[in-house]
Length: 294
Image (cartoon, rainbow, N blue to C red; front, side):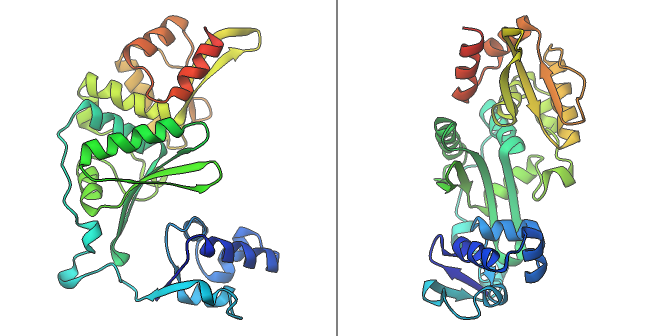
């Protein structure tokens, strides 16, 4: 059974109990008998916590008045094994296109796909800095709605972290069909889908999505304050190699892999060509580039 508290109270309970016991996050996860990633999802209120975990943290019932409802396991299921109406709502299935390619690049960068069949939870979630990337998160919201024909959820969980979420089994199934995977992207070694690699127009847009999310623009060094560099950082080695190969396919000369997590473009002619041919949808990078190379 799982317990639903008033919004914000599940997070408050976790922090209250952790502080009271003086636990580290690892010690707290061990105490509750859950792995750390699951605990983080509870803390972010992306998942409901089990009733047993709640009872361990609130034996005195201090938060009992904050309980909205208690749900049975598999509460998202409906007759015939189908998930709830909210998760099976009709969507538009977009054709392979430049816009879909950019969206997939965004998901490969700052996105996550969740498919929890046991609980009927299907979600595509994209994160960003709500202070520095508010306009970009709005762009992702509009792009998502245009592609799939349903309204995403746009919300903040932390002071500077914003999310765009698509809660739809059909969207999840469609993206998996198009080459993405649910779960941990690093463990799964997610790559750029083949249909994008085989089309340079699609590849440019996918690279834009990747750089907009996991890339940054910076000056090459303090000695060269007006020379820019575009850096891409990702801990998924397979995706890092794929992005390097994609840039090479498009005629760029990225650096070698640095510590198996970073590549960059530093030839100034290629920086200018990147801006012209691929460009940025994330205005944060445009503002940064103008400061370095006005």
